[in-house]
Image (cartoon, rainbow, N blue to C red):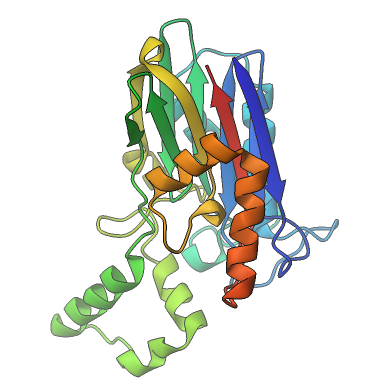
Length: 267
């Protein structure tokens, strides 16, 4: 088995809000993608909530040695995230203030590939027969439209909701979207809330059927290619080359690049 990784900070950020997980003793690998905060916060070292959340999960998964389920480990790390926020006097009853991170993580055993996920960090596998499958669902995709429908529904039920013109402002959209974290028809994320446990995607694949694995943050998503095509390009041309090509593509079209983090495993 061979594992490689990359983490490239977005030029628009002071530090990467992603993190990768490499725990060779437990054969655990993953990617975390902290959600950029809307409400300003910095710890004594100048780190924001996105950095702190992603790196708390990284530290947790890189040091565990217990053979518990990945979903259980996510919830243990999620509880530590809640405790860290309380230590920093964050109002954990306000979803807009919570430190958040997406996570996609796998564990390889002699017989199985186990996986678990929250958010839009994704896991893709290529089987030995050449077929490619995305194991996880991007729960962030389409959240803007689901949020709009939710607001329309709330207005219809008599709730006081600002006019839709208010949500033309990107910050107002994000503030509202955060209230939909870990709710039905919302999106999933590790944010210290117990509700996150209800929405963890997890599963098991037979390891002897798998040839390659890609775990990535949404920064590797391509504006044109499907995620299956992205994975194929990574496995064909190499991780660094794909990230370089994507960066060039974004630059030439004036697109805003996100942090780019991935782990690639060849079996």
